[in-house]
Length: 145
Length: 112
Image (cartoon, rainbow over all chains, first blue to last red; front, side, top):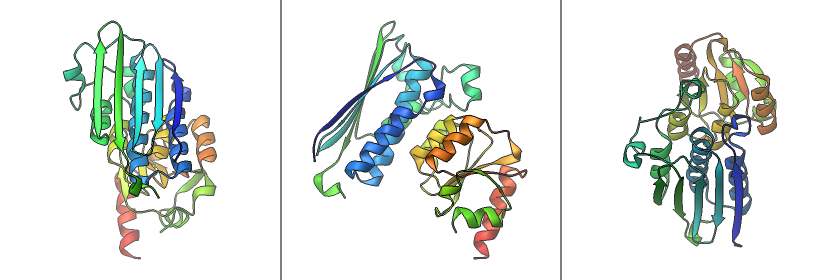
């Protein structure tokens, strides 16, 4: 299997295009024959990462890499950073505004969802600067269809 | 049961996404908080919600549910309908509540 690498820009507050990046990522995985169970986990994580950038950040990007062994998602934004990442990781904790909650977001499940879906999950944030989330999913060759 | 049969049995209006009505339905998930649904809905579930903004279509695509049933005749924006056509994910609607719809689904499954 060839190595695929894509980088997508995600804009702040762009709710009308929300989910487009994760949809594209899902399509690529289907095309190259990633196992459905892994497609689901990567898709959910990609969507949560995309929505986090749209809702909470000043904009950023999502990088998507497939190798025979792993699938990787790297979400990097231009700030404003997370004050307390430990608190942000807690299920049910959210800083989403009332408007955003009315759209059905702000359950405080985004980061915990990503961590649960991932084989490896890392979050790095400098308050006032950026947040970077790196998520890795293992795929051994026998998991390919 | 497929989406078309579900529509008939529960007496639902098909709003859009006719192309996807052959899809099999297995179980129901009810929820309006998108991340929660994202974490819990299973592939081929019929998803019952009153949430109708464009983002529900993305959640449906990611979770691979077989259709979305909008309860209590909640209004559906055009952009959501257009996306449902594009993705071939049926969007159905009913005046019934989520509870009533789920109860009817359970009754329909029992009679199969």
